Length: 376
Image: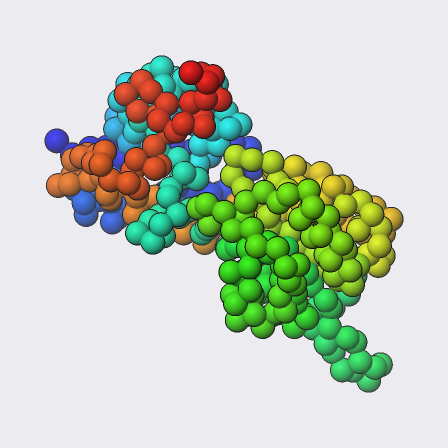
């Protein structure tokens, strides 16, 4: 019997993305599954119900969850949503387990299989499923657009009858997906760009985009593509060198975030106070506390003439393409588990195992298990 893949409306306020776009709904239908969506599920992302040609539209979430074998989400399911799911349901989406331990416990107790998109292994085979990267690319682009809007100066050099305006200097801290996209976007806008990352291996990538690499002579490559934590001595060395580059920048964009952990503090209050009035700091790590000491999540503050902006919602502000990219990530992961319209999960597959949060009444992700159940 074909499985039912269901997509409810997002319950998180201001979330504009949708987990399934019409094109991907059609591709799922071709795999032999039944696709059901809640009425107006894609409205905020500008995907109207009539464009979901291959999906059944359900008027309310209760009926949807009664049919659902697989639930696709963007944001973590609420406790009320988990309560509506049948035992054995598979739910896939961002789960933020470190922020929602009580929901993880509920998923465990209801014997729901949950796959967390932020846990997808960072291996070559899983690149097409890497939702953290797809959404980070959007955030990096949007951060520069937001910076250009908030800045009190042009990005490009302009030669006018009133004289020549020098190009803005932009410093991008963190050369992951978001940082590299920010560098590329700032360069396209005509700025002079510098890029910094504690991972020395990113130097070539930064320079390939036409930016200058800020080298503090510290190599801090870690596991999973992330940086390891710096020693106190390395942090002092980092701040001493970065302080000069921050002071010279008209715009600083910080992207150094690690899922499930506090964001490293890189920019101090003193560094901000040495920036020229009218400068801007865009802190993409605001959700984890910020890379800047003064950042307040989802707030824009003015500290001695320097604007500090800490957005956490940039991908959903580009809801059409963010939804399309995320939906493809979900499809590529889910298609590993579908054969002839039926759900067949291969628990020897390293991608599925690595993405698993809960299954069969157990918390599979060790750090989350320790958070919820304590060390054993």
